[in-house]
Amino acid sequence: MKKTNPLITGTIILTVTGFASRFIGFFYRIFLSRVFGAEGMGLYQLTAPVLALTFSVTVSGMQTAISKFVAGETSTRNYRASFRTLFTGFGISMLLSAGCTAYIYLFSDTIAANLLFEPRTAPLLRIIALSIPMTTVHSCINGYFYGIRKTSVPSAAQLVEQLVRVGSVYLIYAHYTAKGYTPTISFAVVGLIIGEAASMLVCLAAIYFRFYSLTLSHSLFRKIKEPAVTYGREARRLLSLAVPLSLNRTLINFLQSVEAIYIPQCLQRYGYNNAKALSVYGVLTGMALPLIFFPSAITNSVSVLLLPIVSEADGSGNHGAVRRAVRTSIKYCFLLGFLCTGVFLLFGRFAGTFLYNSALAGSFIITLSFICPFMYIASTLNSILNGLGRTGSTFLFSMVSLGLRLAFVFWLIPVLGIQGYLYGLLASQLLQTGLCVFAVRKYLR
Image 1 (tube, rainbow, N blue to C red):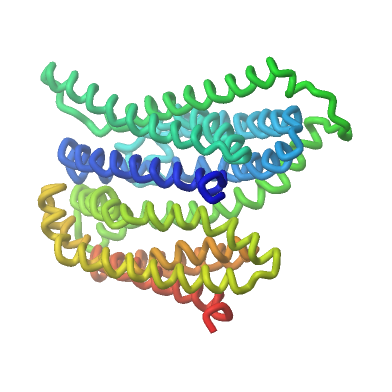
Image 2: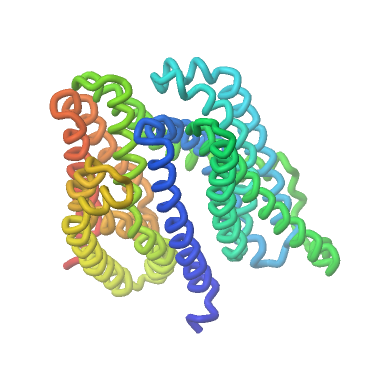
């Protein structure tokens, strides 16, 4: 029965795809760091907050809303209603993405100079702006397929996006270097556009064939007794769920963006020049942190599985199952984290030098190794709390943790340098884990 459970099957598919994508992305980061250097990686990483903010504004909440309402409608085989949900949410998100694309493209110089404090990111922002509508398309379609529990489509789109992005950047790099041109970090941004386009095409093909197959079987147009639903009512229903989710996501991403933007600025207050600050920032966010986060693919997949299991157990009053989930999660996440901490402590310096040709990356990996047990425990407990319906608590814990990190950014980096931020990462993760454990304390008795 477990083998035929779509939830188990979907989780396995997402886990395998997640590992494959992280594996490809991990070596892609090594390639970027060696070709474009630490400063180029710093410039590239500075554009990430802009993408994260636009995603949270345009489609993050709508993707979840589409997934939720499509799941309820397809259980009744009312395909017409599920497609209406998809197209309505798609239309709303595309309007928002068009506005964000135009704004970023037209005001890229202002954003680069006044918000990112790095004018050299302006041409990168103009290229990145073109990816926003593509991201919106495949995110909405992915929400539909998540709702009907066909995770193979989002997984395939994710894998294709990674493969095409990496392959296109390598081909562009090889072509231009063969002609004697010096590679720039804009190659990586162009690769991002090509990868997003490939992912969008996969999703469009999948939704077309599903629509076409249902039309041929007349299932889409079967007579179903239902109240007349206008697109206006459908839009209001979707927005009632999507807007609060988007606001929460936007607020968190905004604070994360402030953190990312001001780390190089505070490093300059510590005494670094602009190039040195960007290089240190690039080593941390583009080299050390991806390696630290690599094993979290396991806990992320466990979290996907835990949420519906805990939700079902809590709804049926099966507190014993919730208690076992909490205790087992803490136990095995601590063991996994302890193992990863030991590996990073022993081989962190070697990994930094061998993979990135950077002794600084090795130093960061060793310091950040202590974050692993707390990070893995917090991720699974957050999923359990969401399954228990305590989404407000997880949002509050994330905000408190971010607030503490920002305090370290503004007050300790100018005094201690990047070590001040590393201490902030450790302190904030320890705080968030402690808050999560406190929130589930009754299940530990």
